[in-house]
Image (cartoon, helix red, strand yellow):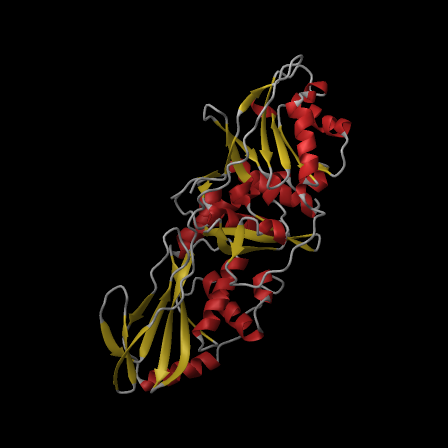
Length: 443
């Protein structure tokens, strides 16, 4: 996938004589990273039964055996969608199944570490308990734990919620579950996380990540406003992380904080992780963007929900020679549901709120949202950006207002009235968002 880029044409603006000028509409994302999709259980059952057991076929090995212990494997989402397997293991006796059933009933209730986290709160009480059990096992690096359900769909929903609430679980990708039966009766499930490293390696990498995160967050305070924190995280990810297809460890935060190269899943995990350090509620949303698998975030600022896509915030444009210049696109920092749906489609794995708040929208907060025609007001915004050679994007209340500004400042050349000694201008006109970006940084 190419990162979201815009193509722009270099144009000349003469202080004394202005010709007719044309600009290019933004080149929106044509291809989004195939982000990891969590598989559904794909168990095969034969019609043959022996001694009240089922014969299951593993999709990887192509062989099956009679067992009373069934192990299913669920793969995490990745660039290449993981294969779903059902894998057979040694058969325990009925007595062993009874012992496991008794043991699972005696398990101490786990700590409720996730109360208040968004995805956790969307689960019912039974699903929350399974979530707590699974999370405790992952955090403690346990190999296998019994869980308080025999419903694999409950287990799946709980695990999906964990992945949405915790972007920092870089040492685990998916899980294996084991079903124990007594005769034809299913009596218990065991949950086994699939770890990608040993606990010692995890601890060393966590130390390195903590050091980098501390350095990255040195410029923001817990006393800052939610908007300041959100913009800081959005900016620092765009400035310090490169979008690279096939980047190493791209599905977790290692790729962001240690490698500085990632894809959409890495960005979404990093947003959640950084926001957690700053006391801002955030969860990872999976789905599609422009028809391709994608990940972004649901965030809560000052009690209102917004959507954030840090992947698309890391933007760029190309001039007519094909030279690319990076810039931060703030359209995707605090989106409403309607704005999010312009390019994103959630997969529905977790219920999502209707987001309609705009008070923490970048353009409104920074004063770059234009609702009435006042050329002097607009010129006063352009002048300092020109002096500092920055990109400035102005969002207009409707298309007519944007067209009026485009005609006046660009086609008629009145930008020279406010930007002293300007001789050329690089701009982006975006009809979808009713915006004009003045790219003074390449002049």
